[in-house]
Length: 274
Image (cartoon, rainbow, N blue to C red; front, top):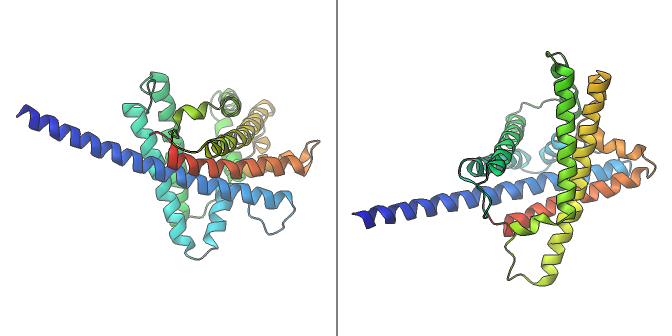
């Protein structure tokens, strides 16, 4: 009787592991689609395309909506982010893959990612259902304005800005240090493929980190000035890169990096240990 029970437990664990793998790989592939679209839109903005959508999640969804079977694709993206949320939730509850995946800090980080991807999934599915919605820049200003009106709102917004900026720096540093390699299972993959994936991870992570750091800095500035108009979404943050000494070429570099991060997400969907 004990052996039968143990056998059932093994089969159940196997099914659970398989479900977790499917949700993780579907979620990563979906994230890749979104980043490739945002990077492409940012490139069009950098080169002055007047017909380019905003280079953020809403713009990417609008771009998809204009394609054949656009509605179906948007629903698929929404479900993909539901998968991403479920994968991160499983990591928060049972620990991530790897020897240190069960550490409290790892689980807490996974819980934060669960909330983030739940928000993204809700936004995409609302768009798919015809909810439309305001742009990312407008949402950022609205949320900042409401937060500033709360008791100690200025400090809360400032703390949020610092948190996002620090997260951006951490993302960039981890990309530069290639910490993502410990999550990859590419032992039998040819060397040139491994180097290609490393390049994607470094270039994409640095660009993603730069966007997060800049967006967090704008939120912090909005708190210091007590002015929600200073807060910027992804599109306005990307456009702000053109105001630097490098001009539109910095935006070109970041846009290419975001697109490469999308391709890196596809590589993770294939080779990441989950």
